[in-house]
Length: 178
Image: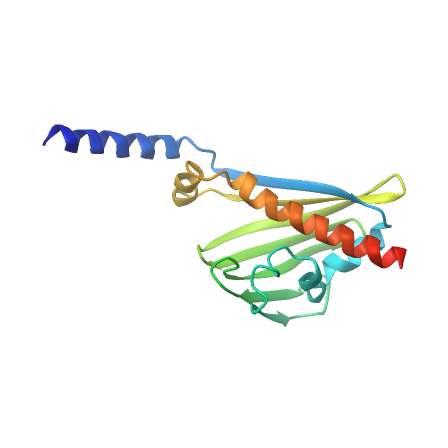
């Protein structure tokens, strides 16, 4: 084997070794304080029909399709989506719902990569408003570990969460001010 071939094998081996050292799980979380009571915030979260108004991904593909199954809101409510390469395709289903306090969601991504993650929205009173914490957690398979060597997933997903929280905050606060 040539020196160049050995160098390439060594580099690839190093990349694989670095990827294998990455954590087996990930967690992304962002929060915002919304000047509204928890019930006003929760109403926009618990009904997937309301998400188009604030979701950071809705603006990435206005032609994306959404289909709804189960009840309109609460446990068992489900929304499937399909859109362009920025939005991808998948399904989310509400697994747990504690009125005005907590929402747990199962996220099933079909494309661009298959993955299943957990998302949650936690609401806590803060001053005259509500602190909303949006989290997503999941397992890092080898492909995700390799990807994370080149892309800061917390920053990438976190930026979407920050846009979504800002959209939701503006939507709720504008409605309350009107």
